[in-house]
Amino acid sequence: MTDETSEDFAQAVAQAEIARHTLARTEDYLRRGRRYHALSDEQLTGLWVSVIRIWAKAFHLRPTEVADAEAEFSLRGVVPSGALVKAELDQICAAAANMIERLPEEAKDRLNNEIEAAYLEDLQWKN
Image (cartoon, rainbow, N blue to C red; front, side, top):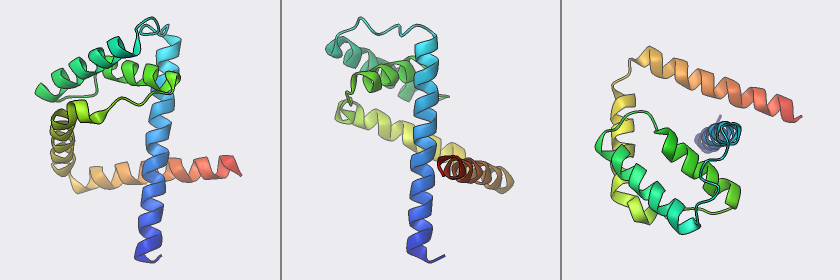
């Protein structure tokens, strides 16, 4: 594989993994009753900004409120402005990168292999 095709493959795998997680979170949100359905876009944005800011202060796994707000945005076809929480998102990304960097190489390899296998399985399912 050339560097370009390797990068294209990595990009496709990353996009597929994001899509898979987005779909799973949206399905979970719908199963639990779509609790943010009645909020206006402005109220939903305010909630999303608040929970992102809280998450950035105490980085851990993504809070359910963030996933639920993003699922509701997705169902509405709305994309919240990352500019509203750019500093916080940068903090969260840095903390996640640090966490991944500290993983043993075997764990990184296992995660990469699992993600790649899921992507290749999805490709077979499509065809």
